[in-house]
Image (cartoon, rainbow, N blue to C red):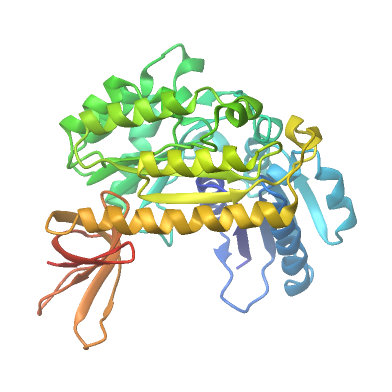
Length: 426
């Protein structure tokens, strides 16, 4: 039997789209190549959101070609669609560069003699993961000046709600207890279908599914967090995770304008305050870019202050990465790379501090953990590890005998915290 191998870089949407391709290949009779064995077909799903992601994409392509002699190597993803696509011509061993993933699926289905119309819309399991990501939307037209994504992704496109509900039912039947709704611009879900406000309606339908444990939202813009969505989260705390991921990017209004972001720092903090007012014990994670062109020392200090005021529970920090084809790459006053790294390191330290503070606030509360693994602790006892509803990593001591398994939702009492990790007891 022929075998395949996949490598995925970048966002959760990319991981979902790779899983779609894997299920298609498996339906066509291919099986995943064993570790150390050469594959007959390999797919690299690339990312170019930063220069480092682009470098890792090129590295993965070359490694797969080298380790799988004679492989049919397919490159897809944002590298295959963006302005750096021409650079792929310098890499030997690539059989196909597929800019359109839908077209790639159709071509593979035809080669595997599968009827594309008879295939399920979406996926049936998220192999290798306890939680399952569900792509409900694609495309972004926001036009942030630093971002290459609008040049590499299609126009706004939302999946019909019935398709999403059907997919979530299949994932639940495969044992997944948590799904994460994902998209390139999640808050715009439904607009292209003529259904503004469709996201809360979809979340409400999913929360009502008897076989689903809980649903979580991935990244969403602060202005798109409506009171309707917050009221829904507050009304279903056991089914909808009290967790929002809001990209801040900068806490300085001048930098935000230069970035093309659709809010001021005060508006961002107002939305955070409103969310925390309506949703008790809300966890807030977010993204920040350090060293954007023209970011003065005082502008950076304002970002640090806004990060503190927002009280993020987890912070993703990115040194600014110039991307060819974006307005920001041609802006004056580019910050030297060493200074970008220094500022990013300081923000990461601040993020670790805030994460520890948030975890400490949960001590004494009961939390529900999606079990990712069950192992032995340092004393030979059993412990489960995973993320709770607030997306805080949690280790749970288990009393013997235990039948806790991967993908279970386990309720436990948080006894203490250790540098952002909760230590709990079932």
